[in-house]
Length: 307
Image (cartoon, rainbow, N blue to C red; front, side):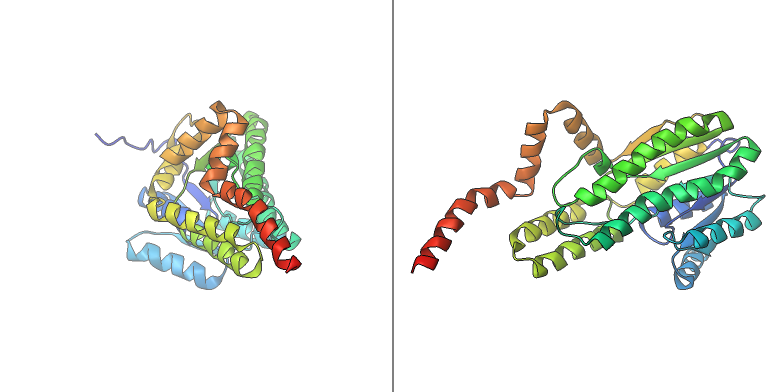
């Protein structure tokens, strides 16, 4: 028997960031189908129009606002626009927008590193800060931040992205304790691997590094692994349903982990000693092969230079 949503507990209006694709799109459409007043953010007017058309094609009502998550003024203007569409501000926020950054710790430029932290951490928390005053005035509200299972499962070739999501998770836990006295409930959602355009961009980043770096084997192996994982991953609907459940539950959990890979990975990271989890990940990314080949490559290089 299908479990019914508690309409009294479920927020009336919900602001969803990054609503034009992947988890954000699936969540926006699901919440709209439940009768919620959904306002989704888009990075351009073209994407905002496309989001509205997608909703209409499914017989759903959904508003879209243009917002640049890296621009504080744009974020403030978007929240003011949302306040006009609702009774002074959204009853709930789903801070979903995020961007990937793949490659070794030494690969990306400082500009790319700043960008991923600006979007995944600073921008997400900026939106939380902007919607909180209206929630405090009402004496209730709900915030759901979408982090990643990788925040608890660091792996090679994704260190900067993992660091950004780890920071978001930690800040979410702090925010939850700080806002409780105001009647605002804060929930963390940690999805595992989901088949979305997000992963396509991550693979493209690795492909670009493989052509630009002399140490191409590392990036090729990582890109191939990501491709295999992506092909076996499911769509964003389970994550969307989890977010909807977190918004609708009278007493939501503090953290929802979504996906078998996320649960298994988190368990491994907690139970296994670091040397063992390191070895598993090193072998998964075939870095042990590269290390084993290094002495032979050095000998060959000396022989070549000697001849």
